[in-house]
Length: 293
Image 1 (cartoon, rainbow, N blue to C red):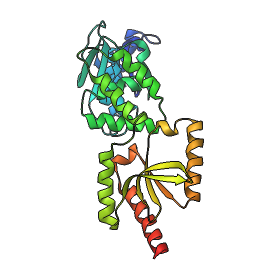
Image 2 (tube, one colour):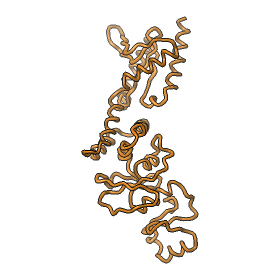
Image 3 (cartoon, rainbow, N blue to C red):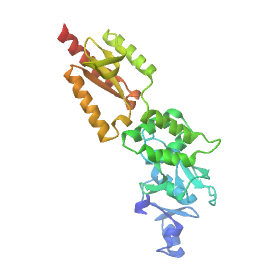
Image 4 (spheres, rainbow, N blue to C red):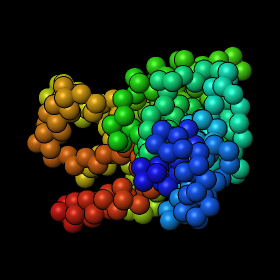
């Protein structure tokens, strides 16, 4: 019970105690019987984790959807209170008070693991389930996993198994992943950034500005203030995902600095809060404006 938030299935109790022992513990007030399948220690604190544990043991299912997102500590789900449980389609179906039970024809034994002592769907399955809900919530969670270094190939492999006609959630996850791994931030977003910088600093930024080293094109900066040698670049996850890519980027940055350029990076994770990027730009612009004054 100590490893399961104060909860045990009656089948687990039987491994060490008899039915009579169990009845005595309940009668003495040490345990309470939640249902025919689960008993709970009265000395254990009543928590959300305990509710989830009771639901998974009662249904013989696994935590899923927003419940799994909270257990996996995905960005945006720290206060998710609902209890969702997933069963394989051919499992015997059981209900649990206060829990929503889902069924899946695709879910396999290998698609689960233990998180905080609770059987839970693996992270890619959780993302696919979130894609059936609010799009922005799934995007936020996906970007958080990428910042944590989760392998995109694993997510794609699992999504390929869950891709079924009439069930577009897996494809939504893959499309969002492709945009962030292989693509860059949309140019329209940079235009909005340029407008904000223009209004804040009173300076016009140039799109797609080429920087040459002699006759050779060294870089094409997404946004630039050429007179001040200040550039803004969007960084995709893929660009920094391998040591070779990191070395190439570092060498390119060194060459830009030798030419006098100051570069500010913008990542996908910055989309939710541009204040830090704008503050950095404001300081650099102010310093360089004073230097050329």
